[in-house]
Length: 213
Image (cartoon, rainbow, N blue to C red; front, top):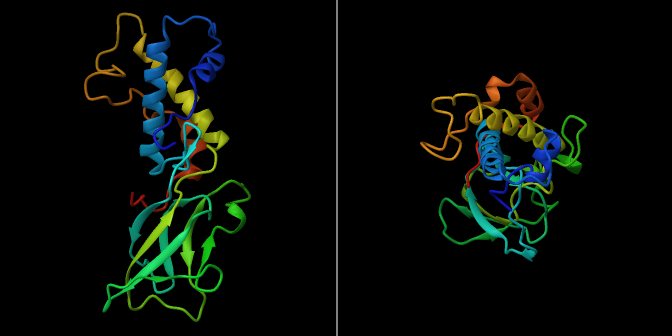
C-alpha cells in the first residue's frame, strides 16, 4: 500500500550479509529502510506502491481532480489498472459531470505499460483522439486505483543501497553529528544525489511532473 517501504528487514540483512536471526539492530535497520524509501520518493517525485490492497483487503477506488495540460492531453498521477476506472469532466459553463468512454473519447499511455523497452509502468497520460478537444473542459475527476502494480527491481536495489549507507552512518565509530535516522527532523542521512549508482538506477523513474495527490 502507499507508504510501504521498498525493501524489507530480511532484504537488508541479506544485502548486508547480516545474521537473519540477530534482532538487536532491527530498530536501526528499519529506520534506515524507512529513511531510504522516503528519500527515493522525494528524488523521483512519485511513490511506487499502490492503494489497491491493504492487508489483503481490496480498497475502493478514490477520486482525484486534474486540469487539462493541453487541448488533447491530461497529465495524471500514476494509475496502474483500469479496474474501477471512471473519468468524468466538467465544462466551463456547467457543473454537471459527463463520463468519458475509454478507447472512444480517450486512450491511456504508455501503451502496454512499456517505457524505453521496460515493462511494468503505470498509465501517466490521458490522450484524446484528434477529433476531440478539451477547449471547454475546466476539470477532470478521475476515480481509479493509483500507483504501481509492483515495485521495480531497480527501485528496490536503490533502496537497499541507500538504506545500507544510512545504517552504516548511524553506527559509525564515535557517532556522526546530525545523522539520526528516527530523531531530530527525521531527514535521511544519505541522499540519492550522494550515491551515483543509486541515482543511475532511479533516474529513469523520475516523474516528469509532480503527483497531484
